[in-house]
Image (tube, rainbow, N blue to C red; front, side, top):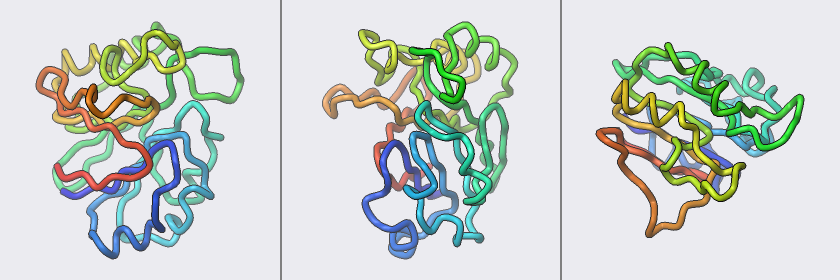
Length: 186
């Protein structure tokens, strides 16, 4: 399966141009985007679109673009089950930002079913995160989920790991870091 993933910044080119050059089976958004960052996505109706909101998202653009909100939900496409978790570790008080304490995230993911691919804005604790900065610390709950449920993949954005320090595997789970846009084959 070929997937176009977008996170944290608008894609480098128009989405229609990307998928015209490289056809995809699925489009996923991983947060910290707004509807204007995803221009043209509303016109794509023949490819499923899944997403999670990031901590800087308004939390209200998925419907207008035809994106299925994957936060604590599952979706199966071509025999592969996707699940999602939004936001990042709470680092400030905000009524609008998508943020959870480590304890809240633990409780929310505690009984989440096994999926093949986790779509997350924030990475797991200790994976492509920066634990010296609470805003870019990973979720402990995602690390526990990987340890217990063994998904095949976890896609995330949110942080800015150095290329030479990029973690691409945690236990048996392939970790895919996305910044702007990427074509991912699974």
